[in-house]
Image (tube, rainbow, N blue to C red; front, side, top):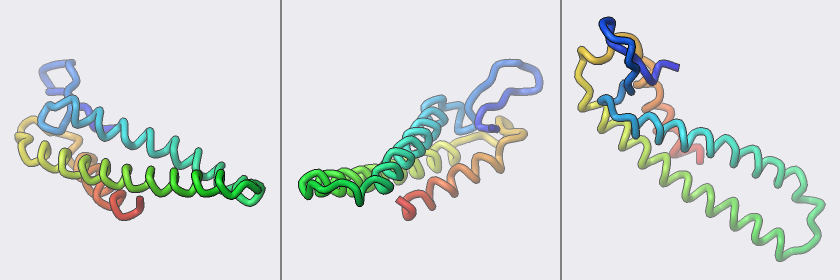
Length: 115
């Protein structure tokens, strides 16, 4: 909620990560897509015992494994990208969202291991 901020003298919002809009968009994008994928694979897990075709089961397991590997890599890229942009952020540009930015970096790091 505090990924975008503005200066007290302006009403224009900018990303707290070094004013780089791509950093905020990347973090939001992989987070939303990961959430949707979790819902999909959760539904697959619910119906998995009812799938009798072993070929379909194999492809679903491989898709889950491949997606998890890809998303582990994307969370690693996100962690590196956000950390780099946060390191280049000037202190006078961030008045309110510093703790939220650090939390986003921390959770992107832990997402590497959870995926």
